[in-house]
Length: 337
Length: 271
Image (cartoon, chains in turn yellow, blue):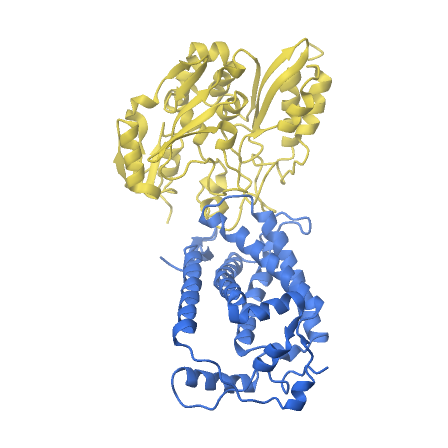
């Protein structure tokens, strides 16, 4: 019998109005609770009846999780701030435009109006075997259907695969890592801040999670320090459909250039692995080098060292090489232009 | 709350995928309970061993001060296997109880070391050691019955002294052979499911059902080894057994200990 989709299974819905109430509910329901931000990831899971939480905690009424505040020359962005609000915020556009570019690239205007920055960074993998409900490693099984001799794996990982080859689909995540952001996490025991690059978890550490969030944890805010305000930024996303789509790959870099040489740099690539990858070896190699094509080419080659393509995603290696190159040397104008 | 977790395969079959991981705690608590019960039994209930005296003064005079028990090769095998086994247990189960780290590579490397050491041991024991000395024989079974009857307060003749290995040693070896072979044989096939320099990955080598059963067997033997290793370490550290543990380091047993616990007729150790 065919599965009739689009009708969600029953669950208990809570709509707390404060963070404290939310934490109390999370504590009360533990693993049974599903936290919903904008709902764009959640409703796919629920309508397809693949995830069947007993309790859904909808954060839409928690106003203290919304808004962008200036703090010590940096920003604190509430986790429930919509992508549209992030994109349009004047300080984000002026000082941290890599984030507005990344958030804008994430989706269509309608989705950006509903989707939140917290949801965008915390969303689950988009591997269709996993999303299709197959009991793969990520779903608690003992196989990766995307890493078999006959698998269709054009969008999957070329780096750091460990049994699971799904990738992280976020566009704002690499921008936040490039900006050295911190993720503020609260639970009933207190608050902790985690560096954005440590917020994401690869399958070698935990194959069933994309982030460090555990039952009871709530991402409340994202703090962006002033360190990289006004730096030279580069963000580029490559996708199948320009109107809106998940990234085949994206790159974000923040750079301070003095006298034509790269003084400081952070460079991050996403959709190459199960978590956004900060390319520290590339950063070390290009620091002090002139910002030009030769440095970009060297960086690109270094970035793909160790990449292991699957059957259908070999194109991701030159794609990554070129994205890294362009993120450092900029986009060259075509010779014929 | 089943012992095995199941999933639906792409062909609609219900197949096992692995054990339920609460069994880790069952094994750990079971092992701990055994240790506590045994310690209480030895401390407060057990009577001193009585053996049939079988050593003539003439024969006893021929026993050297240090009786060779384990060759260097046997000792090396034991300690390499021990390190591999601990590495396997740590890498397999710590991530399941919340201590997260990239465990897979360490796990299969330790698994290969264990497999190689077991292969060495099988060959070494078959051709260079007294192969049958570790397997329970008729006398062990008779003496086991006698010891059980005496421990439960019934009349029975005193058991004889041990051959090279006490009966409980032999039984432990038998169980660890079964568990060890189960984890290594399934583990070698499971290498086909992860990225290693040795094979091209092929998760379709077996059917989903066969793979599932293999994962379950690997898991059951693995959690069983938690309890078995706990028991082994406990006995190795018990004061009255410590002399045996030292023999696994230095290779010899003291003459007095040998004469007290072993039967030279069953395990010859003359000068």
